[in-house]
Length: 286
Image (cartoon, rainbow, N blue to C red; front, side, top):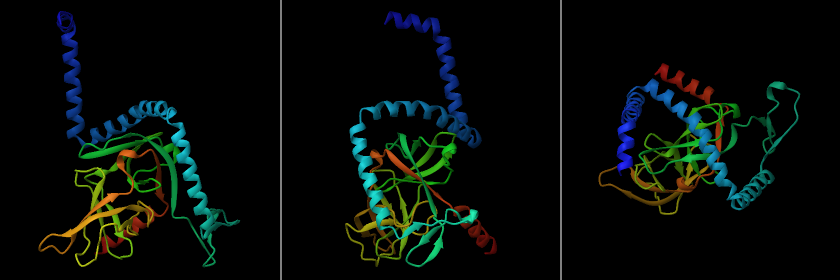
Protein backbone atom coordinates (compact mmCIF):
# COMPACT_ATOMS: atom_id res chain seq x y z
CA UNK A 1 0.00 0.00 0.00
CA UNK A 2 2.88 2.36 0.88
CA UNK A 3 4.44 1.69 -2.55
CA UNK A 4 1.21 2.56 -4.32
CA UNK A 5 0.94 5.83 -2.41
CA UNK A 6 4.54 6.71 -3.25
CA UNK A 7 3.92 5.90 -6.91
CA UNK A 8 0.89 8.19 -6.98
CA UNK A 9 2.86 10.99 -5.28
CA UNK A 10 5.60 10.72 -7.89
CA UNK A 11 3.38 10.41 -10.96
CA UNK A 12 0.03 11.73 -9.74
CA UNK A 13 0.19 14.81 -11.93
CA UNK A 14 0.74 12.77 -15.09
CA UNK A 15 -2.03 10.30 -14.22
CA UNK A 16 -4.45 13.15 -13.52
CA UNK A 17 -3.58 14.77 -16.85
CA UNK A 18 -4.21 11.52 -18.73
CA UNK A 19 -7.58 10.98 -17.02
CA UNK A 20 -8.70 14.56 -17.75
CA UNK A 21 -7.62 14.31 -21.41
CA UNK A 22 -9.51 11.03 -21.88
CA UNK A 23 -12.61 12.51 -20.26
CA UNK A 24 -12.44 15.63 -22.47
CA UNK A 25 -12.03 13.48 -25.59
CA UNK A 26 -15.10 11.47 -24.56
CA UNK A 27 -17.17 14.64 -24.13
CA UNK A 28 -16.06 16.03 -27.51
CA UNK A 29 -16.87 12.78 -29.33
CA UNK A 30 -20.22 12.36 -27.54
CA UNK A 31 -21.66 15.83 -28.10
CA UNK A 32 -20.20 16.78 -31.50
CA UNK A 33 -21.53 14.64 -34.41
CA UNK A 34 -18.61 15.39 -36.76
CA UNK A 35 -15.93 14.61 -34.19
CA UNK A 36 -17.94 11.58 -33.11
CA UNK A 37 -17.92 10.14 -36.63
CA UNK A 38 -14.17 10.76 -36.92
CA UNK A 39 -13.51 9.01 -33.61
CA UNK A 40 -15.74 6.07 -34.62
CA UNK A 41 -13.87 5.68 -37.91
CA UNK A 42 -10.48 5.85 -36.15
CA UNK A 43 -11.59 3.42 -33.46
CA UNK A 44 -12.87 1.02 -36.10
CA UNK A 45 -9.56 1.08 -37.98
CA UNK A 46 -7.16 0.72 -35.05
CA UNK A 47 -9.20 -1.49 -32.73
CA UNK A 48 -10.19 -3.64 -35.70
CA UNK A 49 -6.59 -4.65 -36.28
CA UNK A 50 -6.07 -5.66 -32.64
CA UNK A 51 -9.40 -7.50 -32.47
CA UNK A 52 -8.60 -9.33 -35.69
CA UNK A 53 -5.35 -10.62 -34.15
CA UNK A 54 -7.22 -11.68 -31.03
CA UNK A 55 -9.94 -13.43 -33.05
CA UNK A 56 -7.36 -15.25 -35.18
CA UNK A 57 -5.65 -16.52 -32.03
CA UNK A 58 -8.93 -17.79 -30.56
CA UNK A 59 -10.03 -19.29 -33.87
CA UNK A 60 -6.87 -21.40 -33.96
CA UNK A 61 -8.25 -23.43 -31.06
CA UNK A 62 -11.64 -23.86 -32.73
CA UNK A 63 -10.52 -25.12 -36.14
CA UNK A 64 -12.35 -28.44 -35.81
CA UNK A 65 -15.74 -26.83 -35.15
CA UNK A 66 -15.16 -24.25 -37.86
CA UNK A 67 -14.23 -26.91 -40.41
CA UNK A 68 -17.45 -28.77 -39.63
CA UNK A 69 -19.40 -25.55 -40.07
CA UNK A 70 -17.69 -24.83 -43.38
CA UNK A 71 -18.46 -28.31 -44.70
CA UNK A 72 -22.12 -27.87 -43.80
CA UNK A 73 -22.13 -24.47 -45.46
CA UNK A 74 -20.54 -25.90 -48.60
CA UNK A 75 -23.15 -28.66 -48.71
CA UNK A 76 -25.92 -26.08 -48.41
CA UNK A 77 -24.49 -23.98 -51.24
CA UNK A 78 -24.02 -27.02 -53.48
CA UNK A 79 -27.64 -27.98 -52.85
CA UNK A 80 -28.81 -24.48 -53.74
CA UNK A 81 -26.74 -24.57 -56.93
CA UNK A 82 -28.17 -27.93 -57.98
CA UNK A 83 -31.75 -26.73 -57.48
CA UNK A 84 -31.28 -23.21 -58.80
CA UNK A 85 -33.36 -22.09 -61.76
CA UNK A 86 -30.71 -19.52 -62.64
CA UNK A 87 -27.55 -20.49 -64.55
CA UNK A 88 -24.70 -18.48 -66.06
CA UNK A 89 -24.62 -18.03 -69.83
CA UNK A 90 -21.83 -16.67 -72.06
CA UNK A 91 -22.28 -13.30 -73.74
CA UNK A 92 -20.16 -10.99 -75.85
CA UNK A 93 -21.85 -7.88 -74.49
CA UNK A 94 -19.36 -6.34 -72.07
CA UNK A 95 -22.10 -4.35 -70.39
CA UNK A 96 -24.10 -7.46 -69.50
CA UNK A 97 -21.32 -10.01 -69.09
CA UNK A 98 -22.53 -10.80 -65.56
CA UNK A 99 -26.05 -11.45 -66.78
CA UNK A 100 -27.80 -14.69 -65.81
CA UNK A 101 -30.45 -16.68 -67.62
CA UNK A 102 -33.80 -17.65 -66.17
CA UNK A 103 -34.18 -21.20 -67.46
CA UNK A 104 -37.93 -21.31 -66.85
CA UNK A 105 -38.90 -18.02 -68.47
CA UNK A 106 -36.17 -18.08 -71.14
CA UNK A 107 -34.94 -14.53 -70.55
CA UNK A 108 -31.86 -12.76 -69.29
CA UNK A 109 -31.79 -11.28 -65.78
CA UNK A 110 -29.11 -9.56 -63.76
CA UNK A 111 -28.33 -10.76 -60.22
CA UNK A 112 -29.69 -8.30 -57.68
CA UNK A 113 -27.40 -9.05 -54.75
CA UNK A 114 -23.67 -9.44 -54.25
CA UNK A 115 -22.46 -11.31 -51.16
CA UNK A 116 -19.15 -10.68 -49.40
CA UNK A 117 -18.22 -13.19 -46.71
CA UNK A 118 -16.51 -12.04 -43.52
CA UNK A 119 -15.93 -12.75 -39.84
CA UNK A 120 -17.22 -10.85 -36.83
CA UNK A 121 -14.22 -9.92 -34.67
CA UNK A 122 -16.10 -7.84 -32.09
CA UNK A 123 -19.73 -8.03 -31.04
CA UNK A 124 -21.75 -6.56 -28.17
CA UNK A 125 -25.20 -7.66 -26.99
CA UNK A 126 -25.53 -6.25 -23.46
CA UNK A 127 -26.10 -2.52 -24.03
CA UNK A 128 -28.94 -0.51 -25.51
CA UNK A 129 -27.28 0.12 -28.88
CA UNK A 130 -25.02 -2.73 -29.95
CA UNK A 131 -22.39 -2.87 -32.71
CA UNK A 132 -20.27 -5.40 -34.58
CA UNK A 133 -16.87 -5.05 -36.23
CA UNK A 134 -16.34 -7.21 -39.35
CA UNK A 135 -12.97 -7.97 -40.95
CA UNK A 136 -14.00 -6.67 -44.37
CA UNK A 137 -13.79 -3.09 -45.65
CA UNK A 138 -13.56 -0.79 -48.67
CA UNK A 139 -10.80 -2.83 -50.28
CA UNK A 140 -13.14 -5.85 -50.22
CA UNK A 141 -15.99 -3.94 -51.85
CA UNK A 142 -18.02 -3.21 -48.70
CA UNK A 143 -20.15 -0.06 -48.73
CA UNK A 144 -22.14 1.71 -45.98
CA UNK A 145 -25.84 0.82 -45.72
CA UNK A 146 -25.26 -2.81 -46.67
CA UNK A 147 -27.18 -5.56 -44.91
CA UNK A 148 -25.39 -8.21 -42.85
CA UNK A 149 -26.82 -11.74 -42.69
CA UNK A 150 -25.79 -15.22 -41.62
CA UNK A 151 -26.79 -18.51 -43.21
CA UNK A 152 -29.76 -18.71 -40.82
CA UNK A 153 -30.82 -15.15 -40.04
CA UNK A 154 -30.21 -11.40 -40.06
CA UNK A 155 -27.37 -9.75 -38.14
CA UNK A 156 -27.28 -6.00 -38.79
CA UNK A 157 -26.52 -3.10 -41.14
CA UNK A 158 -23.11 -1.66 -42.07
CA UNK A 159 -22.80 1.99 -41.06
CA UNK A 160 -19.09 2.90 -41.25
CA UNK A 161 -16.34 1.41 -43.41
CA UNK A 162 -12.53 1.72 -43.27
CA UNK A 163 -10.08 0.16 -45.71
CA UNK A 164 -10.08 -3.26 -44.04
CA UNK A 165 -12.95 -3.24 -41.50
CA UNK A 166 -16.65 -2.44 -41.20
CA UNK A 167 -18.65 -1.17 -38.24
CA UNK A 168 -22.17 -2.62 -38.38
CA UNK A 169 -25.22 -1.66 -36.36
CA UNK A 170 -26.47 -4.89 -34.79
CA UNK A 171 -30.10 -6.00 -34.91
CA UNK A 172 -29.85 -5.32 -31.16
CA UNK A 173 -29.84 -1.56 -31.73
CA UNK A 174 -32.79 0.70 -31.02
CA UNK A 175 -32.50 2.36 -34.44
CA UNK A 176 -32.61 -0.94 -36.33
CA UNK A 177 -35.79 -1.55 -38.33
CA UNK A 178 -36.05 -4.55 -40.62
CA UNK A 179 -38.96 -4.87 -43.02
CA UNK A 180 -40.41 -8.33 -42.36
CA UNK A 181 -43.53 -10.35 -43.09
CA UNK A 182 -45.25 -13.49 -41.89
CA UNK A 183 -44.82 -16.39 -44.27
CA UNK A 184 -48.00 -16.96 -46.26
CA UNK A 185 -49.39 -13.43 -45.75
CA UNK A 186 -49.02 -10.22 -47.75
CA UNK A 187 -48.92 -8.00 -44.68
CA UNK A 188 -45.57 -6.67 -43.56
CA UNK A 189 -44.22 -4.72 -40.60
CA UNK A 190 -40.98 -3.77 -38.89
CA UNK A 191 -38.75 -5.94 -36.74
CA UNK A 192 -37.47 -3.80 -33.86
CA UNK A 193 -35.55 -4.48 -30.67
CA UNK A 194 -36.97 -3.10 -27.45
CA UNK A 195 -33.72 -3.35 -25.49
CA UNK A 196 -34.41 -6.31 -23.22
CA UNK A 197 -33.83 -9.95 -24.25
CA UNK A 198 -31.13 -10.28 -26.97
CA UNK A 199 -32.77 -13.40 -28.40
CA UNK A 200 -36.09 -11.71 -29.27
CA UNK A 201 -37.37 -8.83 -31.40
CA UNK A 202 -40.87 -7.41 -31.90
CA UNK A 203 -42.79 -7.41 -35.19
CA UNK A 204 -44.99 -4.31 -35.43
CA UNK A 205 -47.83 -3.06 -37.67
CA UNK A 206 -49.49 -6.45 -38.31
CA UNK A 207 -53.32 -6.05 -38.27
CA UNK A 208 -55.10 -7.79 -35.41
CA UNK A 209 -57.35 -9.87 -37.70
CA UNK A 210 -54.38 -11.86 -39.07
CA UNK A 211 -54.50 -15.34 -37.44
CA UNK A 212 -50.93 -15.34 -36.15
CA UNK A 213 -49.95 -18.31 -34.02
CA UNK A 214 -46.89 -19.53 -32.18
CA UNK A 215 -44.37 -21.16 -34.50
CA UNK A 216 -45.23 -19.08 -37.59
CA UNK A 217 -42.23 -18.15 -39.74
CA UNK A 218 -41.08 -14.55 -40.07
CA UNK A 219 -39.17 -13.66 -43.26
CA UNK A 220 -37.50 -10.57 -44.67
CA UNK A 221 -40.09 -8.80 -46.84
CA UNK A 222 -39.72 -7.55 -50.40
CA UNK A 223 -39.90 -3.91 -49.25
CA UNK A 224 -36.30 -3.69 -48.07
CA UNK A 225 -33.20 -2.78 -50.07
CA UNK A 226 -30.85 -4.18 -47.44
CA UNK A 227 -31.61 -7.90 -47.29
CA UNK A 228 -32.67 -10.59 -49.78
CA UNK A 229 -36.41 -11.11 -49.86
CA UNK A 230 -37.50 -14.30 -48.13
CA UNK A 231 -34.39 -14.66 -45.96
CA UNK A 232 -35.16 -16.21 -42.60
CA UNK A 233 -35.59 -13.79 -39.69
CA UNK A 234 -37.22 -15.79 -36.90
CA UNK A 235 -40.18 -17.68 -35.45
CA UNK A 236 -43.24 -16.25 -33.70
CA UNK A 237 -42.95 -16.87 -29.96
CA UNK A 238 -46.25 -15.28 -28.99
CA UNK A 239 -48.83 -12.87 -30.40
CA UNK A 240 -51.58 -10.94 -28.64
CA UNK A 241 -53.73 -7.85 -29.05
CA UNK A 242 -53.80 -4.94 -26.63
CA UNK A 243 -57.38 -3.81 -25.86
CA UNK A 244 -58.46 -1.17 -28.37
CA UNK A 245 -55.43 -1.62 -30.63
CA UNK A 246 -55.72 -2.29 -34.37
CA UNK A 247 -52.42 -4.16 -34.42
CA UNK A 248 -50.92 -7.23 -32.82
CA UNK A 249 -48.00 -7.38 -30.44
CA UNK A 250 -45.80 -10.13 -31.88
CA UNK A 251 -42.69 -11.41 -30.15
CA UNK A 252 -40.23 -13.09 -32.53
CA UNK A 253 -37.52 -15.56 -31.53
CA UNK A 254 -34.55 -14.75 -33.77
CA UNK A 255 -33.40 -17.62 -35.96
CA UNK A 256 -29.81 -16.38 -35.56
CA UNK A 257 -28.71 -15.82 -31.98
CA UNK A 258 -26.86 -12.46 -31.81
CA UNK A 259 -24.58 -13.97 -29.16
CA UNK A 260 -23.36 -16.69 -31.55
CA UNK A 261 -22.35 -14.84 -34.71
CA UNK A 262 -19.06 -15.66 -36.43
CA UNK A 263 -19.28 -16.01 -40.20
CA UNK A 264 -21.44 -13.37 -41.89
CA UNK A 265 -22.35 -12.25 -45.41
CA UNK A 266 -22.39 -8.56 -46.28
CA UNK A 267 -25.19 -7.95 -48.80
CA UNK A 268 -24.86 -5.32 -51.51
CA UNK A 269 -27.97 -4.55 -53.55
CA UNK A 270 -26.76 -3.67 -57.05
CA UNK A 271 -29.85 -1.55 -57.70
CA UNK A 272 -30.15 0.18 -54.31
CA UNK A 273 -28.90 3.59 -55.51
CA UNK A 274 -31.19 3.51 -58.55
CA UNK A 275 -34.22 2.55 -56.47
CA UNK A 276 -33.52 5.19 -53.82
CA UNK A 277 -33.26 7.82 -56.55
CA UNK A 278 -36.70 6.84 -57.86
CA UNK A 279 -38.11 6.99 -54.33
CA UNK A 280 -36.72 10.51 -53.88
CA UNK A 281 -38.29 11.60 -57.18
CA UNK A 282 -41.67 10.37 -55.96
CA UNK A 283 -41.25 12.34 -52.71
CA UNK A 284 -40.47 15.51 -54.68
CA UNK A 285 -43.72 15.14 -56.64
CA UNK A 286 -45.93 14.68 -53.59
